[in-house]
Length: 364
Image 1 (tube, rainbow, N blue to C red):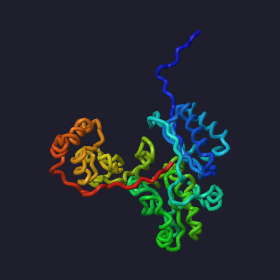
Image 2: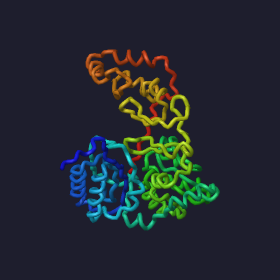
Image 3: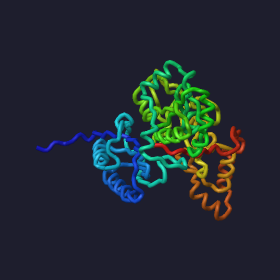
């Protein structure tokens, strides 16, 4: 007897995100990376893996079977077995968030201009469990602790922990130079710093220890583990994630509060998008209406640059074909793009005159 499977069945997909500091000989990098790429593509996983002499950072999506097979592959590796807390950082998603699979070799697991070893990370790691950190927030121990958000400014503005202050970094290379500044900010208090998945803070902890900073703690496995463990309102706003979701809701109708402010109007919003002028591509917090009203440009400067070179990303709500017309503009001096943009934006008021681009910090 042959039975027909339910055609309405849909596979369950998961986003796996993890990292591990492990020493990989430089002579092994090409082989390890190629093996990883072959396996993940054969399995049908999507997105990206970074491999360094310092270790691995991986964010991939796959169905249940693909994710199970990937875990078996990792466990069979002398470098990537025994990765902790993969389950608690995993997130259910509706399908593949990305179009392809990429494995790249980088010089550092987090670019800071200085490499660290796995032994150094283990030696200098000081972590608070989500439960320990929750108690500190719940009891508002800001007289004892300085809570530093080590992510990009736009990530902080989209969402952050209660009592947290931005660390003031744009490029993570700046962190070693800011250690003395953090000491002054702490003014005798202990420091707790956090990032999305924990990877930046693990490496920064090594540098902090070498700079003589003893009372510096990170949240175990970062924001992701905390918000997957507790729905308590201690996280304000949305969480920026380096995947297809971009702006991820944290909490529910009882605990969630929007803190992001629209770039154009100042209204509260959780919407996060990119500047449509391709060379800028700044990450913006903006309401959909205000974003469209400004044709997706973050500033007067980007609008003016787009008039000149037509390097505008195509979206479905702006029917103008910048790719086709742009070639005519650059080749024959056509004013069609200028005319189109000016009709929409010539009398528009701009809150920002220059590009709002920040240098993105890579996160797993």
